[in-house]
Amino acid sequence: MQRLCDMLLCGINLLDLLSGACIAFYSSIQIMWCPKRRRTDSFEDEKESKMPALEPSGDEPAIKIRVGSRESKLALIQTEFVISELRKLYSEKDYQFELITMKTKGDHILDTPLSQIGSKSLFTKELEDGLLNKSIDFVVHSLKDLPTTLPPKLCVAAILERECPDDALVLKSSLKLDKPFTLIQPPSDNKSEWVAKHNIKEPIVIGTSSLRRIAQLRFYNPEVEPIDIRGNLTTRMNKLDNPDGPYSALILAYAGLKRSGYEERISHQLDSDWWYAVGQGALAIECREDDLETIRFLSPLIHCKTTFEVIAERVFMAKLEGGCSVPLGVRCSWDPPDIVNEDFGDEKRRIKLTLHGSVFSVDGTKSIKTHEEADLADEIDIDDVIEETKHFTSICLPPSNAPCYSTVRRNFINSAKIGLKLAEKFRKLGAMEILQEIRKFKSPTDKDN
Picture 1 (cartoon, rainbow, N blue to C red):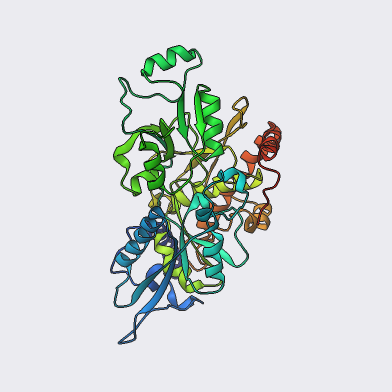
Picture 2: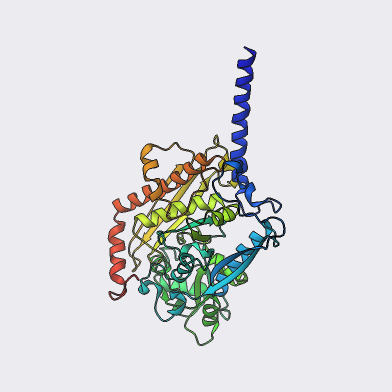
């Protein structure tokens, strides 16, 4: 009897240990990883790991990590940020970073609206070629630039904590208003009342190259005239402030403005009724899917809450056969709203993710809006397991020997299911007809490369 009691007590202690390991796993996968933690400490039982530790020892020379980036100011800021976070985790004596920059197709074509260029890898292909030929170890992207299907042999190894995903309105520096600028016009307002309210001259010209933003402008405020604007962020800001330029304001991503030091120029944050782009505000790190050492190296940067949001968003977009150049917008919300990484490791805690989606016609006359939600701790069935590898939009799961891997995997699957179910709702509501109209709107000579 005593032996039986000892065995039961041992089993209880083992369950406590596993639960603690699960919470510790989620606690450790965040940007502010303990700087003293060695690379091999990411997993509880290193002896069972099939992956090399890639850990320098003794007087061996430092391992060189080659990091790819676009040449734009914002891209370099984001890449340097990731490198700085990795330097907090790993000693410079052990790892050195080499920055490799290049221009992409999207950087070269500046005289054509993005929606008419047509390439699914507009800002990524050249960098991905560098990954595939092994001249680069990993690439830092704005996630919204990444297609939902990556080239074979590549994957997203880490999604970092999301900056505010909202869009923002930036007014011309010389434009002075008597009252705060309200972009979304209430239905009861007419043209003369809205213009008089803001004491500004007609027409109101807003620069943007995004079909999503153009469609929303036409839907919410037909008195505003959207005009295409291209170039990097600094170029666009200079075009805006040019006294002879046509623009009254620009709509840009809040995250890009903040990261580039333009936060004080934000006139109005577009939240609530305004829909942001899939993946907006999040940074993604892409590498080769067979480069297990680099995947492990990057794992401390993973932000779980952001990862689950963008899986749901990207699956939604993928199943509607959309892309970054269609008027498809999203918003995510959580219940409870103050979720942190550690909460996902508690299997007893119920955490609900809601994905709100929208599709607008280019002329602003039609829109579809609805939502889907799920508890990420819900049990999964055999069909989910069979289909799971198709629906993470190239975002890779942590290694299978990670503590509480089954919980992580369940959260991945349930996030993907939210996107799948929301896309099905949109199909039934007629979203595909709107998207077909958008494809006709594009130039018939534009082809995917």
